[in-house]
Amino acid sequence: MLPKTKKGLTQKTIAYIVLLALALTCIVPFWIVLTNATRSNTQISAGVSLIPGTHFAKNLDTLVNGKINPVTGQRGEGWNVFRGLLNSLILASSTTFLSAYFSAMTAFAFAFYRFRGGQSLWRIILAVMMIPTMVGLIGFYKLISGLGMVDTWWPLILPSIANSFGVFYLRQYYKTSLPMSLIEAMRIDGASELRIFHRLGIPMAMPGIATMSILGFIGNWNSFLLPLVVLNSQSLFPMPVLISRLNPSIYARDLGAVYLGLAVSIIPILIIFLIFSRQLVASLGLGSVKE
Image (cartoon, rainbow, N blue to C red; front, side, top):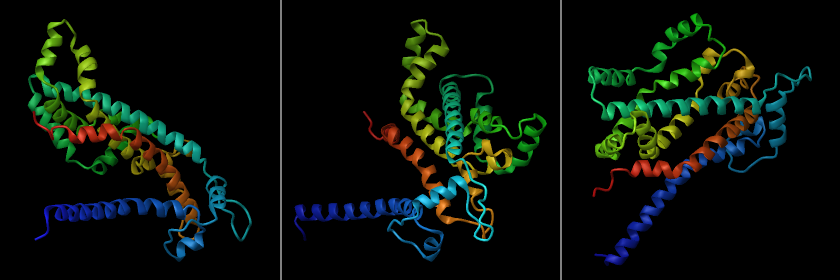
């Protein structure tokens, strides 16, 4: 039998080794993307390497100005990466804000109000959560085509108002974090229902809203299928669609430029996560301690 001190030290050592292995498992793929962004097409095709290359400037030139055809010497079509980043930022920010606000408002109503048909509406929301988005893609396209919204951002922004998962998540959050007595106290003080939501409901649920916003921002930033179907103009393309256009065929692809585009598209997500990481941890820890 090992002494308690040695046993505890051994357990800590094993725990640190496991955590280190998990951290490396998460970090290595990102590092491979960054290193491949600095390597040539031939080097990337040869195999994986963790050592950065010397073709960053060439890959950036290919990404922005287009690839040079070795036969004709002419450049292919270049892509405005900064415009793609701006488009992704506008789409992801607007959809995240609308989704967070209206999901919180709807969840607040389902959590604290009792009204006729409320349970039936709640069951409908739960059922909608189970339906994959791709199932209604054809019908959705016919709808926006009839409304004249094809090749605009409106079909990508407006549906975020009805986020069934956000309503479900925040309703459960309200149930565990906001006592009804506080709402009744504000009603006694003469506050309107909308004022109660803005001054009490939103601040109390801010960790949950932040968590949902982080997940929603990442999902909207990486959204590919719906923008690919809805948008036709290059000036409206977000980053995922722009990156996909770098591979027109297996013979004309430039892997270095593709990896550089991926690396550029990852940076805003990392920044958002670092800014709101505390709210994310606070939300996940809610309810773990009982008074």
